[in-house]
Length: 281
Image (cartoon, rainbow, N blue to C red; front, side, top):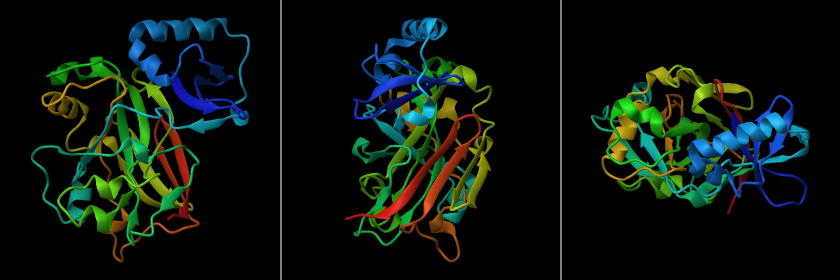
């Protein structure tokens, strides 16, 4: 199943199920977070609603929003593709490099990424993200899938000059609109092997990042086990697994985001996440 959050006309946002027939309104749930928290029982209700549905909303008539508007936490993993660590001139990590991205940075599909005047080095990062579906502490690597709800796309937009001015990365990655997410959360049963997905990013049609999730240094089992050894993972938590080589920081000459450009990330089975770029404050 492909879950979305959408707005139709001037109405409030609500969760939906994206299908070939159109969108099934799931406003019986308060939000997509409520679906995730409801676990197997909630998914069974959605399946029943889909089978009984007589009305479908045309997908082209709605505005897609970030699937999760306010997740509990956004964990990000740095330097998790070997080629990206090398281009960043940093050591290959022996443990996952974890930082947090503020939820206030979340942007919707199609929403402009606003470049802050404070930064002269705004950068892009195509990332494959896990969405936690079941609470867990000290999760063993062989049980990781029991705790995953699904997968989505995340653009870990980064102000490199701010990020690298200290040893703490969070602020340089948490400007408003620096966390586009979407277009949907695809449930885990739809993806046969999450570690065998093509991932690429293009700007105005030019491919700048192209890789496969098989190249991740720390894959989902290790990430979930490591994070849950420190803090209990909660339904709705997002774990963004890192970006491959090709970011602006690692290019020669370096290449930064510019107003007027359009960034598109495509991950096999998850769709496309597209955002224009504009000048911000």
